[in-house]
Length: 399
Image (cartoon, rainbow, N blue to C red):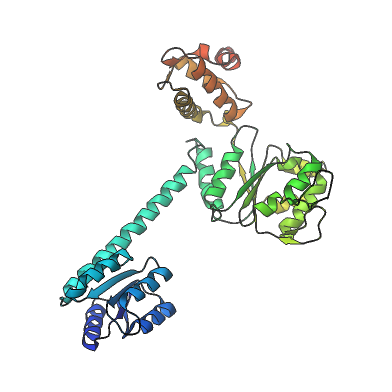
């Protein structure tokens, strides 16, 4: 039920408006001066405030500014005498939804209220549509109509809205980082920092400082205090790519942060508290890494809460034509070329190949093809040798 506050010093007007609006199903509260009206609004909050422009103990403009400052979405309707229309227009500039001049029929006020409700409904619908569009955009670079990819899209949408750890499994080039991006951008932390770190690309001696930061003078070259990734990502998320390659000594420290949400900078004693969501990716089988003693079992169970496995491209070949068209359009735009068709023989070779480098390898192949293409169609001769030869190999084995 919509709540409406009426601020009016004339008793007959106040009672009459209350009776009219209550009969229309609105929940009504009243105040006889501006100060009481602002106090009541502060306690209860209202969807609509109807206030006279001239009031004792704070006029309508003061009431309007106070309400819009506290609740920008509340609709304020000004009641004014004909002589005060100029001031009512000024009130509109301050954020009033509309004004109505005395004397007026109750139906006139009901029309203004109904218009405001419809206006707010459209705003909410626009927000919902924008949210749907924003969510759809998160998947624009994760392409696939195969059942396996549709399942991944559904999983991402569900998992993103939780605050649990997620680990993305997949071979090199399958798009693990794209999935991590979508998980963050669809989460409640999407407007907070999203920090990425590749555990395989940074030496152990530097990785600890990268994660936890260091104090001035901790080691040669530490000329000043430096924040680590955890500190920078506070209230946001960190993406640990190639988590299986994190050294065991750092795995223990990571586990401590995950369990206690606290850590110290290198060389420091101050205990820092952080609130960070963690997302991981690896191309290795972590269970095998645990068995071989390369990965801590307790950390494995801590981060393997919500696993997502991206299938290799060879297991979803029905997605290849769609990916080919997408990458072709991307590189045609980048190189300033008109869109290119793909010759049937070229597409057959592209689909026949097994892509050990997965989507990344296909992307590079199409970039090469678009660059080399001199006509209006990608022909087999534009493709890398190993892909062009895939069709021949496939035919030999199917004879």
